[in-house]
Length: 328
Image (cartoon, rainbow, N blue to C red; front, side):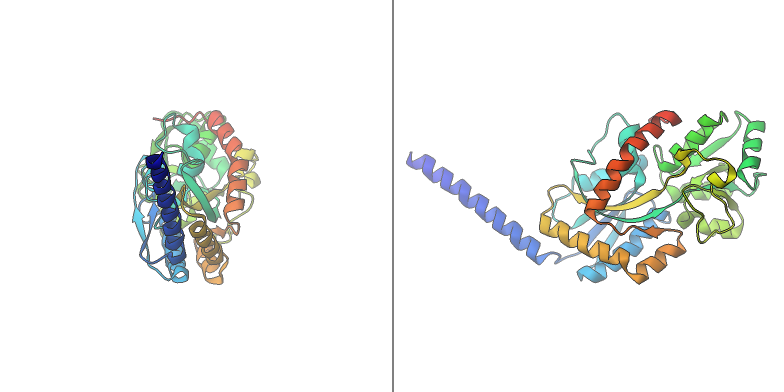
């Protein structure tokens, strides 16, 4: 009995020490560099948002926040790396919609569970996708685009910034619903997709202004329609899909950029990350920088993130089924 009592006392002591240590670590957080993993290549919209966010968040936390680009598997490799990271607040994920909102509906086997393996810290920004065409495509609006696609039925490819991405699903839905007979070409992230679209390797696809504005300004590709409920302030002359007669609710959607941490990260650390992230997103400086990229800040913290995720999840599942998109 004495041995059992001693053993029980040791377990309690270790537990108390562990709790006390966690509280101490949380109270001192952050006291070293924080890594912000981005599951996309440099130069794309997600990378641009992450670098702006890392700079501003680092100022508020009083520590350097470095961006670490981990690409591959539709953003799942970088996301998986964060799911397996120590839950101490020093590794966080700044992700685009695909690995958070979409992939669990596309891929039958996942290396992480977005609902169980992550703590939702905050949304950062949202953007509407654009229908983008290479300069050689003879279409300046959706009516001309559909006519061109039908005239070349079975001969046209379209690109996206990843299997299961919002760009993939929206393009696949347009292809399937209008029976255009196109073939999907998936890229690892948005930057190489935009480069190949501008170069004519793929003639069209759907992407963001943040990644494509340089090529748009150069004239190598052009936007012919905006997905979502309204025109982009930076492209006031480009009408929405609905304005051009494509009123399908599937085209009235946006893409999110979100901040997450590994599950089991101590609540005081999550609270600090959420508080500072929300303050950054609501700051005048951040709003101005996002606007230039055609992005809108999303003010809500963790609770709003959960609410939007739960509302979007069944809609995305439906879209996946309608579009016919499948894991390759």
